[in-house]
Each structure stands twice: as C-alpha cells, then as structure tokens.
Image (spheres, rainbow, N blue to C red):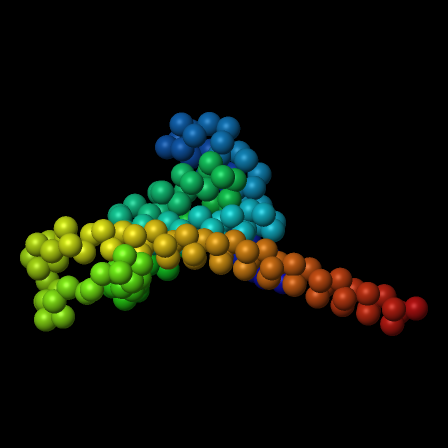
Amino acid sequence: MPKNFIKKYFPDPEKIKQHKNLQFLGERLHTPNLWHLNRRSVAMAFAVGLFVAWIPTPGQMVIAAIVALFVGANLPISVALVWITNPLTMPPMFYFAYIVGLFSLGQEQLDADMTFDVESVWASLGDIGGPFLLGCLILGTLSAFIGYFGMRFLWRLIIISKWRKRKLRNASSL
C-alpha cells in the first residue's frame, strides 16, 4: 500500500513537535493534518509543494513548511516536493518559465546570442525579470492546480479499486 510505504520514510512527528527550535510555532505544529496521510492533507501538500517549487528564491523548503502550517497540508510532503527544483532541473524549468512569461506578455525573446553567464543575466535582469516571474507564477499556479486535483482524483481511484477488490473478495467467500 503506497500510504504505508510513504509513512515509513516520514520523520517522527513527536520528535519534531518537541524540537526546541520549533517551539515558537506553538500549537500550530500539533495540527493532525500536518502529519497524517489523508486525501485533503496530501492534495494540499501537492498544491503547496508544487507552487513553492516555482518560486525562484532560496529557502523554498522553509516557505513550503510555513505555508503548509497555515493551510493544514501534510508537512513532509510539502517540503519534499520543492526538491523538484534542484540544481539539475532548475535551469530548464526556469527557462521554460521565462518562455511562458514571454508568450503570456506577447513579447519577443531577447538576443539569441546572449551568453548565460552571471554578468549577462544580471545586466539584462530588468528585461527578463518580468516575463520570468510571470511565467513562474503561471506555472506555479497551474502545477498547484494539477497537483491538488490530480492527487484527489488518484486517491479516489485507489479507494474505488480497494472497494471493488474487497467486494469481489467478499462475494467469492460466500
């Protein structure tokens, strides 16, 4: 069962609740949905994690954890999903976000011969920043939407499948 497999790798909620550096969160850290695997908390975790993964800033895990605390999403899944954007996937994902932003604004791409070194990108940040951030917002929202409703749909399919198997098993035992 996927639920038991995932739970096996979760951190111990009691250890996290007792951690001295997290005591400032108070009772919010004791919300059951932060640690349980149910349809709502997992779907919200996918929405949070996938949206935050498109935020082009350091500290995505912290942002995902804070948002998960406030919306009642599963905390470990929310934090783990931001690793979709890692040093290997970030360049193509963020370039795609820039292209989506350009398309949305109806703008043309900057000079195709531009070199992608720190100085060139920093010099043209004013020109690429708007389309890039808009593309990140669009893709983050779209990813969150697909993640949320996709997980709810997948969860429902798994439950229906279990019901059918149980019904067949019960019918054959009669």
